[in-house]
Length: 190
Image (cartoon, rainbow, N blue to C red; front, side, top):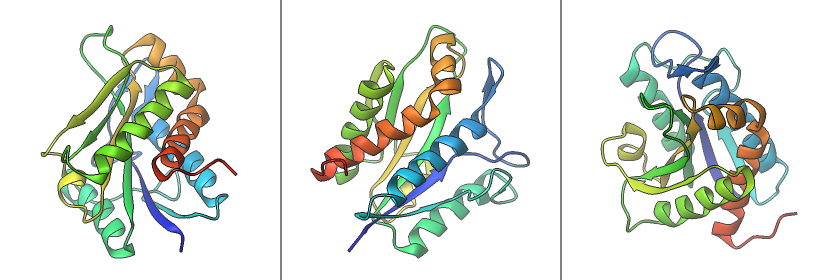
């Protein structure tokens, strides 16, 4: 039986919940593309079944921030996903802040173990700084999913080095996440 992974490409192209912008990059565009690359990698691996929250670049979920987040979580919960991965790009007022981090709801969870492998995959494949796996009990997508859930912050749009990676290395981020998923399950690449 294939492992069901729901990929949430964070934010919307317009309307509610649009995300960050910096250095000429728009967060939702990067999130969408990395999610589609990851979807393709997982679809080409018979061990996985995959769905995405935003099947097209112009898909808008919800009418405000809360309903946008609820739509993503409801889709994963109703499908019966085994794992939920929400993809984001970070920003900070300080342009020196950089690197990748993954958020989970609890340290004593399967999500934490998967987050560690996914973060290692990104850092090893893309070369971003490892900012660690972090606990956050306030993120809606971590609180309301009924399966282990990760919120992946790929890198910082506001940091020039990360921004270059986010612009030119979107497939690499997806591949790093994919390799982390394989490591978590103890699978070899096909």
